Image 1 (tube, helix red, strand yellow):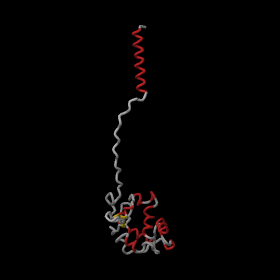
Image 2 (cartoon, one colour; image 1 turned 135 degrees about the vertical axis):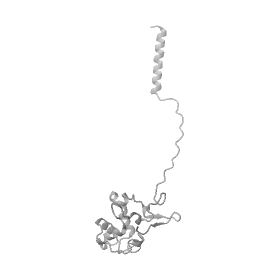
Image 3 (tube, helix red, strand yellow; image 1 turned 90 degrees about the vertical axis):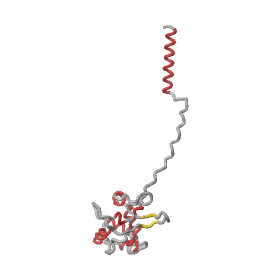
Image 4 (cartoon, helix red, strand yellow; image 1 turned 120 degrees about the vertical axis):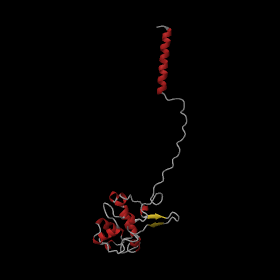
Length: 182
């Protein structure tokens, strides 16, 4: 083989080796610096009545309505409870009561069960410190915030504290919404 041909083969071999090294070895040239990604502002949590429209401005009476699958109006429930309160609800009433022996499984008749709910309930029989009925706050929190997937408030209504508790954004005071049954 002539010197020229050998030189060409050696040169081609060296080029092949150099090309192989470039594809397998990391580059010695630093990559150009990338600009940092712009900081993203987290989305504001949608809280009904605070950062989002309030679908339940009147609290209880806005959730407790006649629906396709059940009539959940308080007047209808009260009529049923005068005959018998469901066992699971009786258990919650006993747990919330200062004296569980006073819970009998029937609710007395309430002539104005359609007006100013829940203030009528909380201001008369179910007031804080009541010895005749479970205090409203304890009872309603047990009813609405326990039970997980079996709890209609947490599932169907996607229950949130602001469904019932309303914030006055000027004063920072909280109140329980109230209204008349529809």
